[in-house]
Length: 477
Ligand code: A5A
Ligand code: ZN
Image 1 (tube, protein in one colour):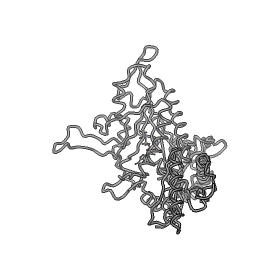
Image 2 (cartoon, helix red, strand yellow):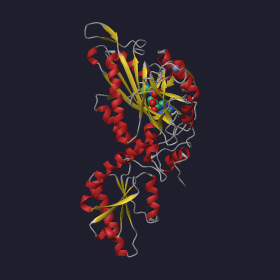
Image 3 (cartoon, protein in one colour):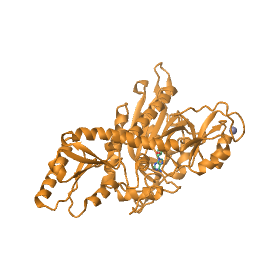
Image 4 (spheres, protein in one colour):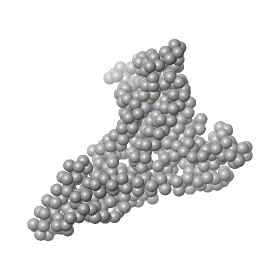
C-alpha cells in the first residue's frame, strides 16, 4: 500500500481503513460506517476534551430519544423546510403502520424544546445549558464521505441552551465560540470563524457562526456551527417563563454542534505520506517500545527484559504504551505499522540501550530520533508532547493561512477559487450580489469574525457599489 497525501481523497479513505480508525464503505448501508477498537479509542479521547470544556462551563449532559414524532418536527416551519428532504422516517411498527410517522432525529431542537416547555417555568432556572453526544441521521443527497458527510452522524455533539433575554443568548453564542476555539486548539486544528450569510444559516436560526478549516486539497470543511435561535422555537413550543419583574416571556435559545468532522479534520490536517500523525493527548497508543532482535540468546533476553521494563515504567506514569514483541515481524515492518497509526513516540531498545544510560526516542512529527536519559524519560516525553502539539499545530496553521488570499476583482476571485484558494473579496452586503458570487465564484462562507471584516474604501466587484465587508468564498465539501 502506498500513501500519497497529494491525492487527498484516496489518502483519506485508505488511512482511515488501514489504520483502523473508521471502517467505511463495507457496512451495507450507504453513509454509515463502523468504529473499530482503535478508532473508537481515538474518538473517546477527543470526546473527553469536548466534554471537559462543556462540563467546566456549566453545561449538563442529557440523553433524548432518537425518535421524534412528525408533529413535533414540523412545529417550527423554517426548521422543517430546511430538513424535510433529509429525514429518515420510521413508519411501521412490526406489521402495523404507525399513526404518526416518527423521524430519526436529524438534530434535536424540537425534541429538546418540547421537554423544555415542561421543565422551565421561572427565570431562576435560566440559563439552562444542556448537551448530548448521540448519533443523528440525515439522508444526505450529496456524495457521502467517511466522517465528512455521513448519513448516520455517529458522533454528534449538540448543545442546547435557554436564556431569559436576547442578549444572554447572544453572549452564550460568544461563549460557545470560545469553547470551540479551545477544543480545536487542543487538537491543533486551524480554523476560520465565519458568520454565514443569511441564505445559508441553520434552518430556524437568527444567525449562524461557523468554524471552517481548509482540507489538504484546498476545499473548505465546516467543522462546527453556533446558532442564535432567538424565540423561533420557544414560541411554537410555548417555552414560557416568569421573568424577574413578574411578566411572562418566551425563552431565547441557542444551539451549537460538532460532529465526526472534528476527527476527520484532525486526521486530514496533520497526517502525512506515512499515515496518521496524532497529538499525544488523543493518540490511542502514545508510545510503542520495539526491541531490536539480537543473534546472541543472552543478549536477546536482556533486550526483551529492558523493553518490558521501559513499557511498564511508562504505564506506571500513565502513558498508553505498547510493547511490540512480535517475533514474526522485522523492526522495520513494525515501525511502518505504528507510523501508519500515528503513534507519537517510538522507543527502540537494542544492546546499547540495555548497557547504557540512554534511550532512543523516534518522534512521529519530526521523523527524527532523540537521545533521552532513562531516568528522565517520563519528564522528557511530557515536554516533547507539548512540543509535538505546538509543532504540528503551527504547520497546520501555516498551511491554512497560505491558502487564504485577498482579491478585489471577480476575475481574480474566480481564478483563485478554481485553484482551491479561499478568497476574501469586498462585498456590498446585498443578498443579490452574494448569491451571484455563490453561483459564479464559489460558496460564500460569510464574513470573517477572526480578522478585520470591514472593507472600507473598497468596491463590491459585482455591482460596483461601496463595499461594507470582506467576505470569504471557497469551494467546499
Ligand atoms: N442543532 C445544530 C447544532 C445543528 O444541527 N447544526 S448543524 O446542522 O450545522 O450541524 C452541526 C455540525 O455537524 C455542522 O457544523 C457539521 O460540522 C456537522 N455535520 C452536519 N451534517 C453532517 C454530516 N452529514 N456528516 C458529518 N458531519 C455533519
Ligand atoms: Zn454588490
